[in-house]
Image: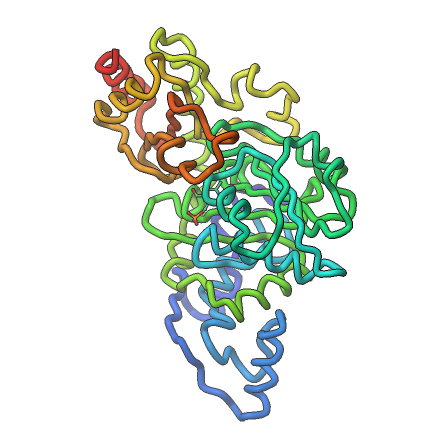
Length: 390
Ligand code: PLP
């Protein structure tokens, strides 16, 4: 099997030589010339119902764009799935996945099971009822008990935002039975984990994070089989949450360095986690590479490495956490994650603000996304910020 490093550089670029170009071409056309009404109409029909363009052409950017399609092919290759469908943001891809799951359920079932913790935006979307679904939130080992005839989807994240909790994907897929399982693979990326190989029907990424990797492009993408891709494209065609070609270009370019960045950022995160565990100003540290955070021993079995996000509790509560975020100099105090520069943020006040109180993170918890800086420089920055907070 071709290695991931090689695939990351070449995936989705198979047509470039024939086009006579070396870099990814950017196609901004919002509309495309049609050979005839009949052929154009046939192609429109094919794409609006979830299929591919026919000889009638691409018709309209909301239905198909070559730059976006190349990125989709690239990510599907890395996730080892038949297809992938890209959206304007990670949240748009979660929205489309839920709507597609309702449409694909034999009785249009509108019940979703969501394994907590989840990214605050996902939790809020599902809890709010905005999409017309009823959501049962539960722990991973409670999924089987909550499956109903109208359950159309199980949603989980692993490692989960913000506490890096790990979920045994194959166990949840088994517990869900015939119900499709969506795994948000944003934190692991295809470099560390391929949920489709463990039975997940839908593998979702906020591409805004590691896939782009530079904090300058938003996007979401779902890797899946062709049947689910058709369902997702149907939703995308009518709801319109398509990825802009410029975003697709930047995200596709990000794939080439993804394995390299993940490994380097993970190495830095491992060093920081070990250092934080020993620090007197720090309480619990949450990182999949620490044995106490991986009771099911999923690192090595399901997850090829612990990743580059970690979280920790600050001695001194919310006030001390606030002072740490104000005192850091190398870390940027900002939401988001997965970029080449390190970020620090307070989940309870920011990314997980809309989450119900029973599932809200502790207010002394800070989340770190480790970038490509030297780990010792990052430790020194945190050391001075923790000293300032005491
Ligand atoms: N999933 C996870 C795990 C996330 O962390 C985020 C954003 O932080 C999202 C989904 C939503 O993605 P986006 O911000 O691209 O809409």
